Image 1 (cartoon, one colour):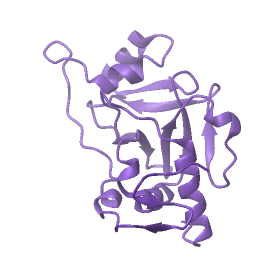
Image 2 (cartoon, helix red, strand yellow; image 1 turned 90 degrees about the vertical axis):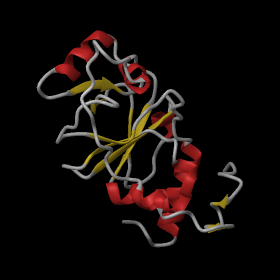
Image 3 (tube, one colour; image 1 turned 30 degrees about the vertical axis):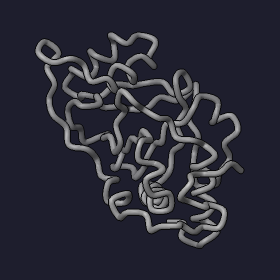
Length: 184
């Protein structure tokens, strides 16, 4: 297992500092604002997400529809690891700022969070209590920087400097949570 971060020893479950509480409280869906394509440049994260679809123009049309969400396939530019929302909160508390730049999507109506990871992760993923999504799976995705929906919301939306979650780091945090009996 690779080293997680200079300030976190995930194998021992100890930190050389206390992770900021912001890591946990920061896991709330982001507020949205209506973006008009005629006046504003597209959000860089929206461009990145739309590019994962075989027809990016269709994604923009779906985001402009009444539902304001698009179906985006996993397995093209990224895979996703799905888990319960409270479990992701425990991951954030365990890792602290290590996961601050990860892209995280939520569907709170069904208590699921989707962490975007590199393509190919799903083929080897087998952590209990999580599901890996890849080529045959699609996610309901609101526009990053766009309109709020009751179906899906970004917890950490993609940006111009998007980082996919490191699967080894995510797996190590999930196992520390399980080992410490803090599995929500």
